[in-house]
Amino acid sequence: MSARQLIILAVAFVAAIGALFVIRGMNQPRPEPDAAEQIAINGQQVLVMTRDVPQGAALTASDMAWRLFPQESVSDQFVRQTNTPEAQTQFAGAVTRRAFAAGEPVIAGSVVLPDGRGFLAAQLQPGYRAISIEIGPQTAAGGYIQPNDRVDVLVTIQERVDSEGGSQNQVHTEIVLADVRVLALDDKVQAQATGDAPERVQAAVAVLELSQADSAIVASAQQRGEISLALRGVEAETANMRVPSAAPHATGERGGGGGIVVHAYGRTGGRS
Image (cartoon, rainbow, N blue to C red; front, side, top):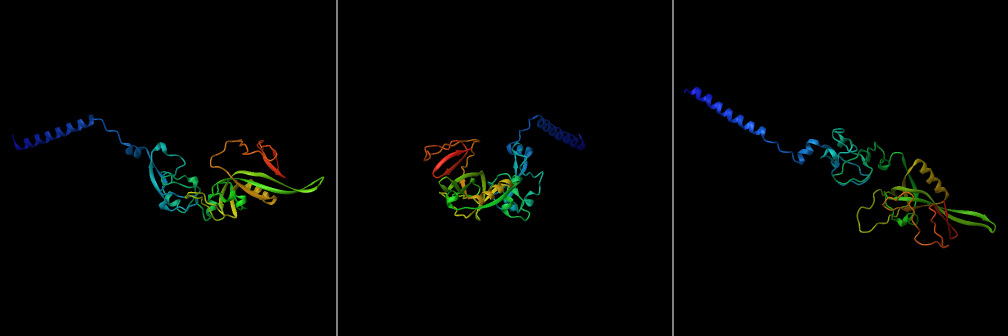
């Protein structure tokens, strides 16, 4: 057998072995991709915060980064790289309307580009206004109201009423608005984040977030009498919820009518 024939046989033998391995590989089932590969296949890049960001903070590009999220966890409200690839640059200088935790996806509606406006204006919800009222510890829950708390707005009115025995002073209190957000207290725009006990804010001015119509109501109430703020709890109250008084009034009656409670000369009565 010549050398040429031996070379041809050797090449054919190597080719046969290679074909055998290829056939065996084709017959073996392919392994399932692991969780990370599945996310890479089916996920999307989502813009998230790289650190805890308080409300009202001005963002920098380093405060945000792209993270891969599973497709089923991606909301339409998230900022996605496929839709806004330059989001890190675009949102630099924007102001947060609420606090974000590190790793939390950025929601476009919660981040506002101020466009030269002040930070407080950027925090206002669309359609709302900021209105200030004078307060003190005796009219603001002892100074324990914080920015972002919810309050009820009350007005106390003193009136001169004529009666058969002559004119007398009459005092009554009305609930003007309920469940109002406090934007700021003096120059304080951030709520207390640490500490073992609540701190007292000795503020002279409270800034409230109100609709245009409610702004006019509060402005009118300030002319009628003294404004007070009643602090509401964190948990949302059920609609038409009625809470009984802690103790009977001096007359032995309770204001259980669900309406405004009017105080006059130490007597109390319900008014719906």
